Length: 502
Image 1: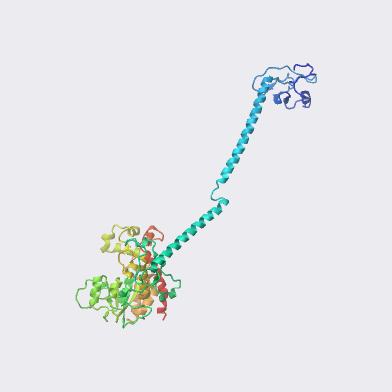
Image 2: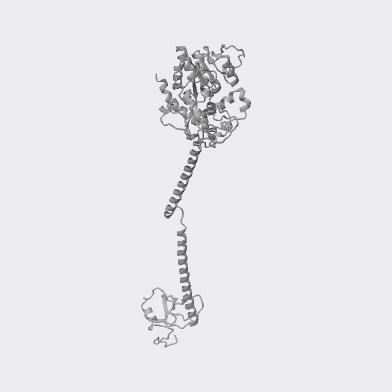
């Protein structure tokens, strides 16, 4: 601007090649021209508006909002002065250039720091891998392997010391293996009863005695007057039928069939309250039953029956009592008892017992406040492993594995098994024994069919409980010994089929 007005000379502050750049633009093109300040090495941008037809020169519109000093117009190549440039202070240009370079440098530094930070964070995050990361799999496998090895080692050492402890026990005495529980909660302990010998083939179970801790169990000597059912076939002249009464399992129906249909004489609880005379006599009840004047439902009544020689009397055809050990004393070596029994799933039996008690007037005051099976299962009235206790003669106190072993051995050697869930086959086997004392007839068959299928004595209808429910689990806690014993009885039921093959 300070040179020749014709534009022939230019100083260091004038635009370089400005005329050439302007000539390269066609008339009416975009109004932005970029000028380069050679001395400051900066870019400045000017917004130019071209004049339209009939208008005067365009008014310059600088983009920089800061006010600048005005400058004279410059005409290029003799053409109308429609291109303008704004002269800016050199000091301001230097300042802006310095600020631009500083801002760019600062931006590059921040970007460099950000990249380094991202790289650092990425490294740290990669070192904190989740357990599901593939590289963590070998570590998890190693941890699991060490855990399994430690558990196996612990169990092996425990079993070794247990064997040493049991081997040091005398043959006639079995030490307590640490199973401790109360009368009502003994079944809740994970006891060692599961160590009892298990047989897959039920056909050989009759020949296999119960073995626990390398000790073979035999039936207690108190049951010596009861016949071994696998070794001694039933003989009506030397044996007397003994029905071990298991409550709510079908025993009452069997007694009704024996007395009402087969016309056989019973010695059971039916003679309760029939006098205390010292003479044994047969009474005919209002319902057609024939029974002796004795009460076999309690130890005192059994002792009286023994004094009246019920076991050896020819007038008595069947003896029945829930007390296995006390009733065995009624028989002698010349008149051995031949034991039969009906069994039912322990939990189903417990539920049936609860509803039977609710309908019985004698127990109305006892169970009147109990409305559900679950309440009964939580109360002190619930039975605890009834089968195991009466078969092992352990009516109170904690149960131990040896009690279960004794109960199983008694079942194996002394009892003909009948199952309520298989009452047709069970009754067929029992008829084989009853027919030796009574001849069959049409009236007897009709009577038996009515009692067995249509008019089941003592039957009560109720909703079954669902397996896995709270009531079921509570009853299961009270009957864990009996549940295993019932499974063993089912195997015996299959094994005893050969005794009634003919």
